Length: 334
Image (cartoon, rainbow, N blue to C red; front, side, top):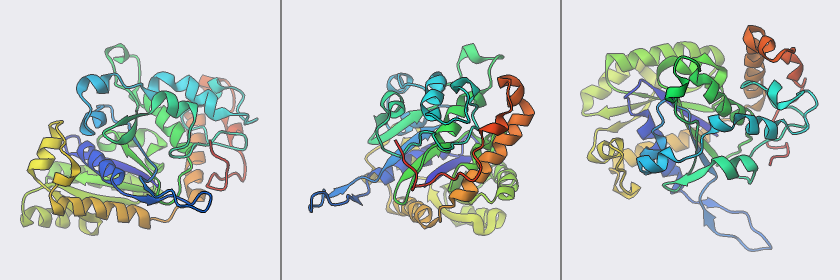
């Protein structure tokens, strides 16, 4: 399942994305038998992606600032990513003709969550027990001449071509506020967790987000954060209603995690660990709908083609859409 963490800047969404990924990494999944013998318990397939303009997921997972700065950036290798994913899809004339919304078709290379491929080999690193890919920072050289959403295009391409199944998780820390709607990236998830503080500003971001997301059938659950007492819970319930799934209390552990000093997850307060487990069971209960997922990808691709991509590439990119093709676990993945 593909999972997004969104919310107002400063709401703690990156901290919660990291805590959730670390929680998943502690779980045990059954490994299929080989040669009549069970391989025993193992961690479930898991990939975390930092798609926020402020790149802090690595440090939230436990990396030092120096280690985080040394991680390879997806945005710096967009041409290689396109070349690999294009495969021998006859509808895509070249890697240069691919844009962030180009959907997969017959001949495209599809990715699994933890399968071996050149993209993961080069651009995914383990941080704090979690396999992590980062979009890369918005640097001084980009000021005034680049759009951060062009960098995030690498994430959209990966998610369009990534086939995940039950018990497999892709956790993405998204850009703050409503910036996610600058592309079709907000439709690339099975579950969206909107992290909300008990404040009017944070609730305002919630209203703005769900106002757009629900037009596309996007599932949004509110996760309260920095909750001190029952009055905070009442405030959230008053403003978000049944969308409030659970909440994390303000705590010494979470405060330390937000300061970049995460302790072993066993030290997390039991009520907050239970909240993370509720997030997992909510994700696991979500029904995968590949047809709708791909339909949204095609819709935004055609919209982008008309708006700017046809002119930029010099061809009609509607031709990249493979009629009647729907990705899914029956397809071959790499």
